[in-house]
Length: 166
Ligand SMILES: NC(=O)c1ccc[n+]([C@@H]2O[C@H](COP(=O)([O-])OP(=O)(O)OC[C@H]3O[C@@H](n4cnc5c(N)ncnc54)[C@H](O)[C@@H]3O)[C@@H](O)[C@H]2O)c1
Image (cartoon, rainbow, N blue to C red; front, side, top):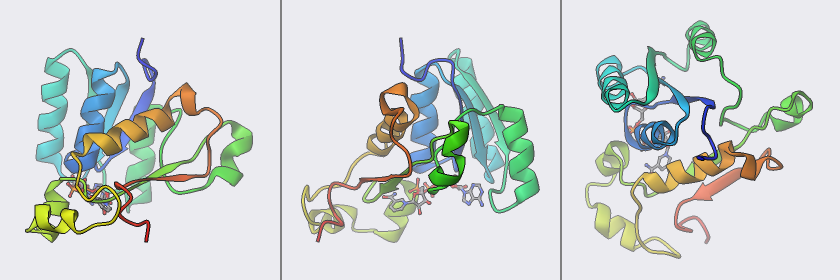
């Protein structure tokens, strides 16, 4: 059984890039996925595609900068665990873990736009000296969401090929 089977997971920014890849991975691993994004057209198309494959996916148009929209979206998702900035100390006593991933050089629309010479840019980074498909960030997030990481909280896991090592 998948380590995130049956879990309700919200993917903010889930209509493109790392978020889209994470939404796909989580849905294919039997989670109940809520995609929250300002890009309604792309988000609805993704939710429709994944639902058509038998996955449990809904899309809620959400601007994460708008508190009221976020509250409405969380209600719709009935969420139990989410990945965000370190609020772990405050929420730990309620059994809520708060972790983040620190991505870099993931081959996404945003990163390609910022780095038109992608291969050249990533080859010049330290350590692994290459980029990644966004599934590498999504896999790290999936581990953080699973019981395998049940004693991990308050951390940011770099998933960047070591490009910030120096
Ligand atoms: N790709 C990388 O290597 C890399 C490196 C460093 C940081 N990041 C960070 O990771 C995150 C995802 O990056 P990506 O490369 O997948 O980008 P992307 O542009 O492919 O996807 C970002 C998604 O976020 C959505 N979005 C933007 N503003 C929003 C808002 N206010 N509310 C809800 N949704 C919103 C967009 O509509 C889009 O679907 C970004 O925060 C980015 O800064 C990525």
